[in-house]
Length: 168
Image (tube, rainbow, N blue to C red; front, side):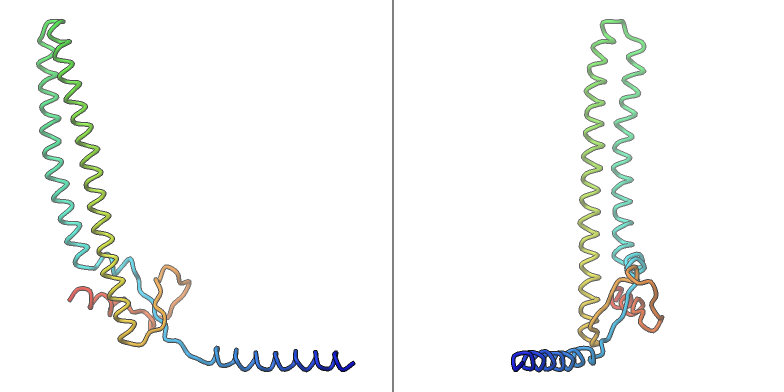
């Protein structure tokens, strides 16, 4: 009987102590906000500059590609006027040029994709750094991406503040 009473007393004390600890944990208020990451990304000046730069680079590469395609068309036009033996020789040149064009397309696509991904990573790092600094300076315990929210009151939206700091 004493063991049962002791066990009940221990369980009661643990529950009471646990309740006090839990009450203290839940008593702290957290400062929480959210950011529309897509909007911040789109309106960040470095994103716009990066897109413009990649577009210009893409246009330059496309102009180079057009020269290669025009050269191929010229070779095919010349081939039509040749004898059968000369056509076969010209076809080898055409096939080589087609392979060069395909290699060029692949390398340009890979190069632009890598550059785009590198720039995107740098931009996301900038955004993360600004959000972290803002949270520390203003005492926020938690800042989340608005896409993770089902609902968030406008008073907790930190998008404008983050954007203004990014675009300084």
